[in-house]
Every structure is written in structure tokens, then in C-alpha cells.
Length: 111
Image (cartoon, one colour):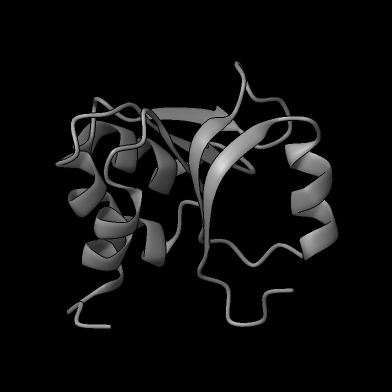
């Protein structure tokens, strides 16, 4: 689609949104965060557990908020990037009644 990376694709598709949420903290998230961090909007990364990798991510991007996937601290809105191998039912359950305007599903086997 003319992009050189997932990060540039995500930034182009999420531009203009007031908030960006990312599910997952692995390699793909680390690849797209530098691009999304340039948008000057709040970015939240939702993780299963806070481990050394997550803490290093927080240190590298202090503006990014890290939240538990089990209990989001506030309403999820704006854009959502799925960068974790979770099944669709779990993502739908997690979103519940939250309203996101754009979803970029980067899983290999999304439904």
C-alpha cells in the first residue's frame, strides 16, 4: 500500500484521531511505537502483565501510558491497533461497550 513499514501504515491510518490504543507489547508494538509517538496524541499500550520488556518500553517512551489488559484505567476510544496474538472473542469481550472509531488488526489470523 505504499508504506515501508507497519509503523508508517498505522500512522497514516490513525492520523487525526484523539487517542491511540495498542494491544500487546511485543516486537510489532516496538516497531510501530516510534511512528505513532510522532502523532502528538495520547498513546496507551494494553499489556497482559508488566515485565522487564514493558518497563523498558515505558522508559523509552515516557509519554506512552501502560495499562493492564485486564482492567483498563479509562474508556477506550479513538484508534485501536491489535498487535498481540489474542483470539477475536477475547478482544470483543475486552472492548465491551467501548467505542473505537478505527481498528487496525495486525494479527496474521484475524477474524
